[in-house]
Amino acid sequence: MDLLSITSLSDDQIATILDEGERWFAYNRQPRRNDHRLDGLTIVNAFFENSTRTLLSFEIAANRLGAQVVTMQVEHSSIKKGETLADTARTLNAMRPDVLVIRHGTSGAPADVARIMDCPVINGGDGIGEHPTQALLDAATLRQHFGRIEGLKIAICGDLKHSRVARSNALLLTRLGAELRFAGPPSLLPDDIAGGTIEEAVVGADAVMMLRVQRERLSEELGDGPGEYLAHYGLTKERFAHAAPYAVVMHPGPINRGVEIDGALADHDERSLIVRQVEMGVAVRMACLDLLTADRRVRP
Ligand code: NCD
Image (tube, rainbow, N blue to C red; front, side, top):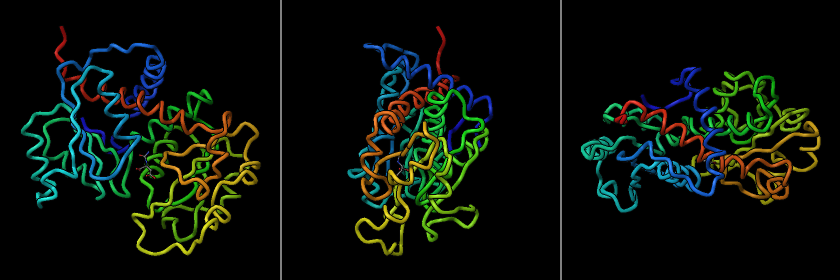
């Protein structure tokens, strides 16, 4: 079994990951974590795009379950000598890893690699495609906070066109019964999503999920000078005041303070779940690694 997209997961698998994620979240708050269920297994991380949260949380998750973790140094790899991704995959496969976690700038690259690998492959974010483990950790964070997802009004705002996080979240949160609203600059709204202004999306929302502008994927200039993006499309205190009184703000990170979100809102003790999302990220990735390796483990 691979974890390439939200669509490929069954309802049961989603429920297991969310339940187990919440369980690992509590487990991770203990002073010692000595689980050994992945003893003797090797997890390889191959990240062809930058990452802080996703890469580190996969490393920590694998370590906490007792696996051996190896992270490929892409900058120092033979990719730089012209090796194709398929040949790199064949090379990695020959080393017999038990899970490969891959992030790549090309949408669909993890699926191509999964066809070559004999072990489960996890998509850690592919171009403007999907980022399924981010959506799973976002859903787990929401469910932990509100006790449910069904019926929640969730605004997803920002660069929807280039956001794999938004794509996976739209698929997952809709499936779990949330009511989604979308907003972003007109040039950053995909054709298949009906989006409005951020004011419309935020009114009465239970949660507001902000997205970073993916400048590395933008060919054209946005035409926003300093402060202009926040003024027109960002989450300011004034806009957030129109959400539900108990509303929370989320962001997958990395945040650009003062661009898509007011820094004080991002840091807000009661209203911001941004740091909680990171903590849940480790827990949910433990749940994913556990689920994907279940049939590879030798039971005593
Ligand atoms: C996101 C990503 O890389 O897709 N970050 C993450 O994994 N937490 C979002 C982003 O880079 O803006």
